[in-house]
Length: 347
View: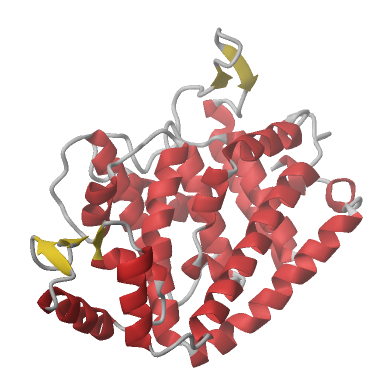
């Protein structure tokens, strides 16, 4: 909420370097539709990989870790869970899938936020779909003892603060007060400062980030995992938040460390996205030869079909199956198990 009270103070001193990053992102957005028309199969594969990576990474940021094979099974729709981590993993799966299925985007509201939160915890006994009733301090143990890093909005003021944030954000967006990515960054910063739910605030904030990016036409979130990039730069992520939330309650905070971090993550995602599309378009021999070369020379000694799909986006499943069968019959690889989950070993 605090970032949207005095827009001139908050957004009036945009760093010069940020303008170049935003321009890069907008250029990438302009290319997306072209790629979607020209390479639909490739983008479908990239979306499948990004989905699993996003579910895995967003949970891992919060210490919710699921074994690789189990993660893929749950991401594919398994409803057999061994522990709470797997249940929370499944909740993020359901929430991200809901966002990716949307064809129209409503204005952000408390009911929408709580609907996403309910999905996050629908497989657990957690209190999903409700605002917090107790204070949830943000603490650190890096010094060897408990230290309060930030004190969010108290529970008795949470509903008002969250409602004000969403209304003010919607107004600033409708009036085009500044670049939409700057507004999204400020929205997420304030949301995390309010910390409106008892558990899952980080994951919920990342879902809202994806929702608003898609709503504003930044569709790279479908094809490249932003959550994976945040996980890989987790220390920078937390530092940017800390730097931007200082003096937030007094309305004297600096939004730019956090917004610049988020913009760099998005620009990196566009770089990766365009590189993957370009690499897939290079014709290094025919497709069967590329699959054969990968299996015999580059793949791990034990691999799965999914490893080939990830390494060679744009090559159809039928082609991969054909080469696997050929190499199996030639005695160069042998399977363990059957179906999509089979492991293959080079002989």
